[in-house]
Image 1 (cartoon, one colour):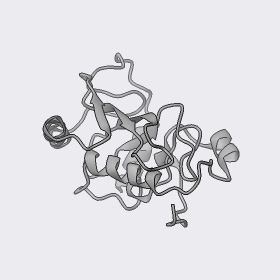
Image 2 (cartoon, rainbow, N blue to C red):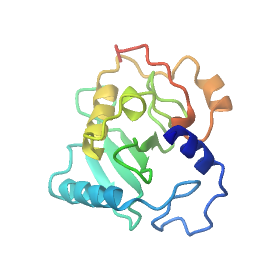
Image 3 (cartoon, rainbow, N blue to C red):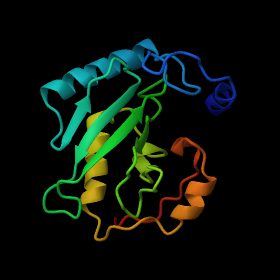
Image 4 (tube, rainbow, N blue to C red):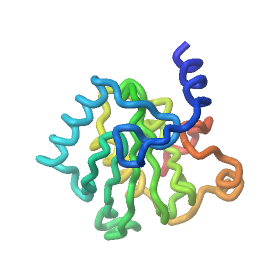
Length: 178
């Protein structure tokens, strides 16, 4: 039933609010009180103890975060800088956030050139116990373990045919080596 409601919600007309309000672009609604409280708590914890290699860019939009990321030393991505965009659904943390790299996305076998990330915890393996910090650390770990800088084999086909949100993709998780 919840997936049917999400499908119906996604067909509504986009909001006409300014981009940096409590409502994100597209079809997202205002955060629930639970989601807003959870995000305020995570942001406060982040400001006290940010994960190494990450910096939250200040914004008054609690529903969309931009996070600067620096590749871990001793890896193929050492000292390289990237930006993650995280958009939170109205019922976060019960539903996973949408996480993408803003261009240019790193060259990695599980990161498409449009910034979409093929990582199971962002989709079917999401747990409400996860936090923005744990998601960021998982992405950094995925990058750090890569033996080669390359795009996914189906990058061109995927980027041409995918929807704007990676959460609308039916991912096939088959490679635990990278």
